[in-house]
Length: 157
Ligand SMILES: Cc1cc2nc3c(=O)[nH]c(=O)nc-3n(C[C@H](O)[C@H](O)[C@H](O)COP(=O)(O)O)c2cc1C
Image (tube, rainbow, N blue to C red):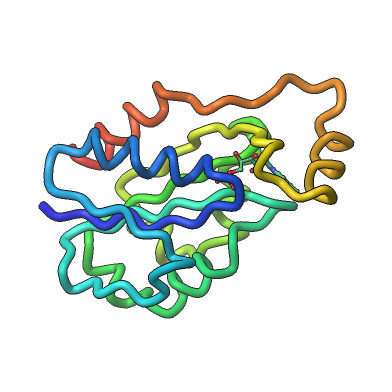
């Protein structure tokens, strides 16, 4: 099985998770940054994993557009989706349903809540300020390796 992991990121977390996933999957896999390759040739792949991060409740618009534009083609593949985010798992399914069509989510064999990180050094001044204000007094998020393991199991089962 050949899998495309198609992701978008603002400060590197979703990219790191995509690369980790790619190493863990048993078949061949390719990691594609949707901001660099806006129309990947999906005919080459049996499976597609879509990964993104959340900012102010939303995933990057390139990912939303990619899923909308390719919905019918995607529905014919094995599918997975994951999110990197600072909030806890209780927000995960709301973020999914607010950002992806139900038709797409219903076809996903695996849905991954991967946690997140604050990569302050990769953020601009305003984002850093927003993040500091929003996260004051709250525990720092982290990427959750067990959830990536579980995602791979669900995806390959
Ligand atoms: C400006 C800004 C806004 C954010 N808004 C949210 C949010 O609404 N909900 C959330 O769960 N996480 C939010 N986060 C946390 C990010 O989702 C988290 O840092 C994630 O790891 C970023 O992934 P990336 O590096 O792949 O972009 C926000 C982060 C920043 C910098």
